[in-house]
Image 1: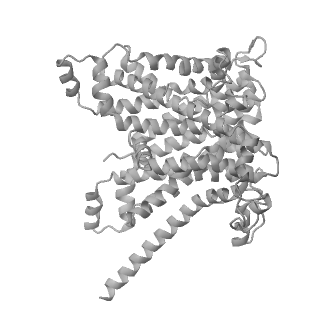
Image 2: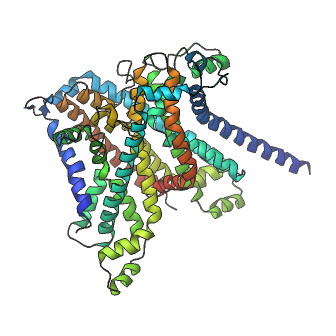
Image 3: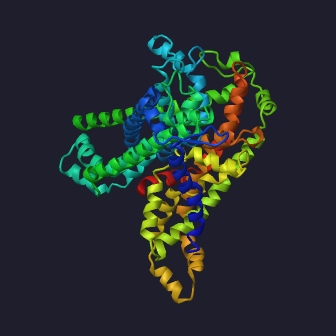
Length: 283
Length: 282
């Protein structure tokens, strides 16, 4: 049993107690000073009545969904292209550059993009103007564009991870399957649609799970880029928890928000595994 | 004959298009970094923001010094190294011992305990951040690096990942060792740890990268500039200037990114394998 002690102790202290803690705290009102007051389910009633929670969840879901779709589609395209015939060093260079943003801290990435997306001085608007002759876009200061800016930056940072996982999945497909399809006269698209894609379904499922969960944990990018604004247009649930707890000092109310996120993550993971059973093909 | 030539042209065209698309994507990744690196050497904000961008006429190094005038940048780096290093070492220890117990030992409630570990993967630190902060502040550990090192020590993903690797190692190895009189400690240390070295390296890389980059815990736990980590320190540096001195911020970002780039290029093979492996083990 000695083997289990280190992780058991850390599990109790940093996983179990905080999880129970967040459930208990969500029934209290407490501003860190003095004693808390027991509220029962009042925090949750307030959450339901508070328009902000829905707004924040809508923004988060939009950003999470957009990042997911972009990463899955663009990542698949780039991974397939990366697997086509080319010199080894060139493939290595591409792979390196795609993956690099993933190892750089989100705060550095977001600070770089805060420059690039600046309305008047930023490179992005400059090039868009040069290429397409369009008006300057207020990327970070308008509620329509701010969530899109967060999506761009967050996809830009995580796309390389998705590509790499795809490439690993592609490489795991036995060469014989594709050769057999060629012998049967299948064209490139038919091979992709009926051989590659079904065999990639476990990989795609893994990417859906990982991308969704990490998108719902998004914090650094919106916080540094837009502070969640304007309004709540680019505020994620995690930033809403952070703001409520550590700027508003409403520990109980913040915990109630955290409980909603916990339920959502559990449900999402559950649904994804149920779906997975039905449509993943294992080779 | 003509048909063969047409096919070859088609082939060349599709290979050309492939390379162009990949090159555009690689440029879109590299350009922002190159632009910020260039900005770090620009003598003025005017030059940094001049459009279209051009190389600085007379590159200067002053901006790097100005970063150190504004914030204890060296401390940030040191703190980040301590935090990410300590979390990684601690996780390797707690995860590998637990993985050994789940993969090799028989005890009552093992499967239930393992199910609990798996379930706890669904509850990330972002959900429990409020009670974690309260626990740390009750222990008097806020504003110390302990507040950043302790909470991530338990890792359900790490336990699960290492256990999967241990399960793939034939039991005959430990049985042979048992016959030779080896106890669990010896089997774990001398036989299984060396055999799982690649998996341990993978976990170390994923863990170090994640906690090196984390922004949430430092913002919540640390108020004191001297105890801040690099990601939060950069935000602090950027916050020192509302406008102006963009070049100093660019220099700070450059100093944060370039060492990562060097390590990344040096370890790329292992990093690429680690990420690929993390996707294959679900």
